Image 1 (cartoon, rainbow, N blue to C red):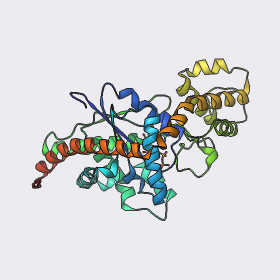
Image 2 (cartoon, rainbow, N blue to C red; image 1 turned 135 degrees about the horizontal axis):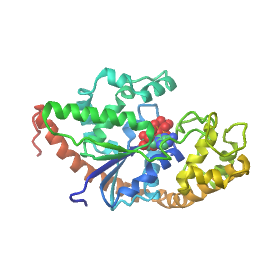
Image 3 (tube, rainbow, N blue to C red; image 1 turned 120 degrees about the vertical axis):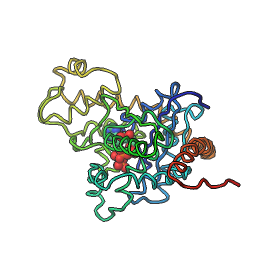
Length: 335
Ligand code: AQP
């Protein structure tokens, strides 16, 4: 499929119905790379089980996430779309990289601290070593660039450190990846608590816009969004709620913050919230209808998964042969 192109890799966990944060911070940017790069986009189900999942829901969300990738514009002819657990090399390299990742480094990861606080009864080893599996996901494909939201920046820096450490011991093995972080949509905040990131696993439905929410729901959630007691649409101390809505509106329309301030000068929050709601809902309408079409065809989704896993596994094997050789493992004879 690809020749002489640099590699892009990214993934999304099927840990809930995807949010506007996942869309604007990550998926919406994926298709921009499809022509110039070899793109691997993965549904990272192995990461999702670091938090307890209902098996039937995990299975359904894995299909749904793949369908959403395509509904958001990822053409399986131009991108390798696959499911992480279908390519066992992720787990294999994940273990190897665990042995090149320091306890102190993992202890400093803010996502581990946040998720341990949220899941105090299930602080498992996988939650702790999540970043070395994520490094494996990326390094397996000799990835140059990783489009992610701002919350993944720290994990990506660790992936770079792990790659450099391994390369330092064994000589050039892995490409050292760079993050690609969109400017205005890098961190979409919760509509209920605008100092907190919008997360798909948030239990408060009013805090989260789901990509598949219908128009009325989107508008209702934006109308309820927590703001402040003022009325001016602008950034400033204590205006995190309005700033979040401005970032969302800017990401969807391409307008600058100055243009948005001018457009809503003297019009109050009600008007602004309605405009954000309508604009977001309209921008997602095409994704919703395409998702409905694709998700009805399970056989097609399974064909895409199988094709993607085959292609990904071949690329992953090239890296694994190199890694095994460098480590001193005996390459197994293939029968
Ligand atoms: N609020 C956000 N703003 C911008 N980008 C975001 N991303 C997530 N939330 C926001 C980006 O979406 C991609 C996929 O995320 P993930 O599935 O790997 O897990 P996450 O970062 O932990 O996302 P969630 O929604 O918060 O999931 P849960 O609730 O399961 O933990 C990543 O590129 C991420 O940066």
